[in-house]
Amino acid sequence: MSTVIQQAFTSMTSNAKIADLKRDTVTLSPASGLTTDHGVLVSDTDNWLRASDGNTIGPALLEDQTAREKIHRFDHERIPERVVHARGAGAHGYFRAFENSPASKYTYAPVLTDSSRTTPVFVRFSTVQGSRGSADTVRDVRGFAVKMYTDEGNWDIVGNNIPVFFIQDAIKFPDIIHAVKPEPHNEVPQGQSAHNSFWDFVGLQPETAHMTCWVMSDRAIPRSYRMMQGFGVNTYTLINSSGERFFVKFHWQPELGVHSLVWDEALKIAGQDPDFHRKDLEEAINNGAPPKWTLAIQIIAEKDEHNFEFDILDATKVWPIELVPLQEVGELVLNKTVDEYFSETEQVAFRTSHVVPRIGFSDDPLLQGRNFSYFDTQITRLGINWEQPVCPVLNFQRDRQHQSHINACPVNYWPNRKGIAPPVPVGHQDLPQKVAGIKQRVRSPKFQEHFNQAQTFVNSLTLHAHERAHLLLNNIDFDLTKEVANNVGGLIPDTPARPNHGKKAAGLSQLDFVPKQPTIKSRRIAILVADGFNSSDATVMKTVLKAGGAVPFIIAPRRGQITTSSGGEGVFADHHFEGQRSTMYDALYIPGGNELFGKTLRQNGRVVHWIAEAFAHCKAIAGIGEGGVRVFFVP
Ligand code: HDE
Image 1 (cartoon, helix red, strand yellow):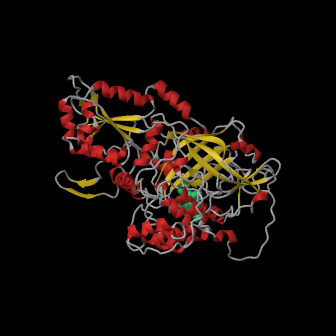
Image 2: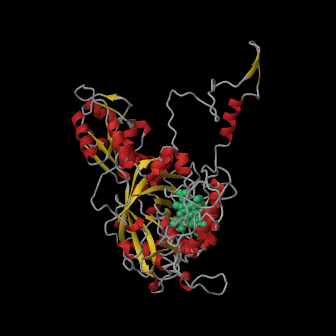
Image 3: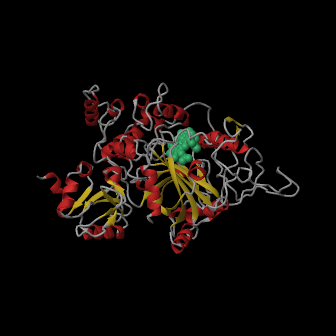
């Protein structure tokens, strides 16, 4: 990068959190010598100290502090992976409220209302089931965890790309996760959510019906993290300056619309490029196409809590947008990739209990359990002393390992005669609420209804998704049940377990979320060339694609210089045919060329397969003259 571009890029992507991280970022000059952890220069990192008389070489000596340190640091490099959402990718960015954000009616949390503020953000996307080394494109829910470094403290919206959850009560979380994770006897399958123990569990636990339909739909195989919605799922609360409380749900709407892979692509990419989504995020940001989302809220006034046929605190239900419209309050932009995966993306930790003043919790039993679980699991994974808000932190929590802050303060208790750190009335607090009841393990009556919204979801899909739990399915849709039972060789029922109410709703099909303006921005386009290609056909197309914000790649029978039909130097191929697959691209273009060019392509099995496969995956394919696709298949 030129210095000017580098400077422009740095100023564009800098924010209070990046500046904070910069203080801890070590950039070594390549010439500085290797040192031990205690800072002593190392003269040899390749040969362990040995006892040798010049002819024979004896044992390795324990004395070699450099060698021992190198090995012992390596031996302890790993930390436990997350018990769920182990595989992820993250990026930095910012959030800004829109001018006249409608949120100001419901809260006076400045992060949502003050459009002059830029709040630094870190987002981590993840899969749920697989371990850290699993593939990106597996059928699974995707995590969408957002950390906002607000001036009032860190606020985390720890969400998913699906608006509902499998279970209603946090006490069932270990069961659903054990059922979906690899099976205990053989640790199979990796990264896949649809397998025997999963079907066993969801078949027996009807509250999972709604989310299971979502997971078996295209939502579970997104084209990109950048093309997914995000949902806070749980019901939170907001408090406004008149002391009124509102229930709220958070939604992230992607600028690029919601798009998915087709199942065949997802399967193939899992082997061909297991890091597909991780690389896609990095590539888009580095190519100047920072992904963007609009934050929208749904609001229900406290007095209306019981006016719905479902319980608004039930995380297995959506709030239909016809009943509770989306209100757009601000924009999230991710514009900086991480400098070190482990330090930033692996060590970041989110908690639903991280809220800031004027944003609070509800009695949603899933949320209440989550508020306990995140900190608890992070003690195992990270220990403590790692939270790093950009606003000042002042309290009397002390000690334990890895304390890097020096608290130059003579007291560590409250009250103290020096008046240090008194609790302040403007600090975080909820409105007073009456809480009374009989201690018992119960769920509200509306929590007992599990199929209405699952039916609406299935009815609202344009295409039937495949492979659903037919046990449950017969409570949702009879025709679909028969189709699935037939395909998987199961029992075909004679009658529906309950009639389909036939209702559809907006905002459930992902086709409801196409970009406001059709765009090829950040799409990967393969341009297939070989010696003898027509240079202007290729370069004109490449220029036009780049101007539209797409990312074109030249692919050829070898990586290197490819000559043109007029014998000119032509282009430098980014990739070799064999190193790539059509699945890794959104569209395909073949320029014209001379006879040699046409022959090279037609006789190359990989190229013929590329075109057939891209066609089968419904991708845009264009060709000119010898590159005309017809030439490949019509004798
Ligand atoms: Fe989580 N979840 N979860 N979850 N979750 C974790 O916390 C948990 C739930 C979600 O990128 C864990 O730090 C319980 C819903 C994301 O670091 C753990 C329940 C939603 C991430 C945990 C739920 C999520 C996690 C594991 C049921 C969507 C990854 C590691 C009551 C709204 C965050 C960690 C990251 C991670 C518990 C349900 C999203 C074990 C008990 C619903 C995106 O604490």
